[in-house]
Amino acid sequence: MVALAVDVAAGVSSRYVLNAALSWTDELGGLLLVWMTFLGAVVALDRRTHLDMDPFGPRVSARVRIALRATADLALAVFLVVILWNGSLIVTRLGSTMSVSLPVSRGLLQSVMPVSAALMLVVLAARWLLPEATAESRRHALASKTPALAGRENEGVE
Image (cartoon, rainbow, N blue to C red):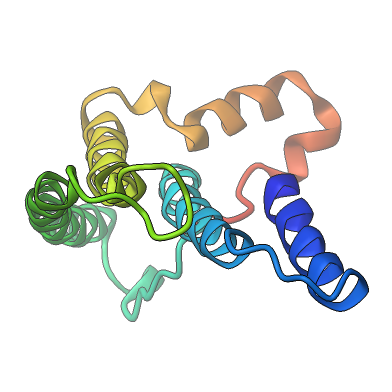
């Protein structure tokens, strides 16, 4: 986020103060924003802070709630596999093409799609296979050790 702020400040300063725009600041800013968004989605998935709709809530049994969550996670996993596959194809196709204003391969710039999809698949797998490795489990463990956090242990968890 600091790099994005510095990039935007450099772009604005060069354009309006020096009256000579830097050619690379727009592309770098967009690239940093995309990477922050995709990698932030991985963190949000791990913390269960993504937008979540639960129309049934407490009206269904715990067993049904678990089945619904498993179904939603399975649908998400299928979607992530599609992103991983297509993102890998895009990276492969753009691998030899250079960026317009940065000395970097466009494939490397677009690699955030398959990387973030793979990381989200790892988070989903950990949620079901290693529940103690998830952010939710770590938050509960920390809350049980720290009385000040005990009231916040369910924040962001539906």
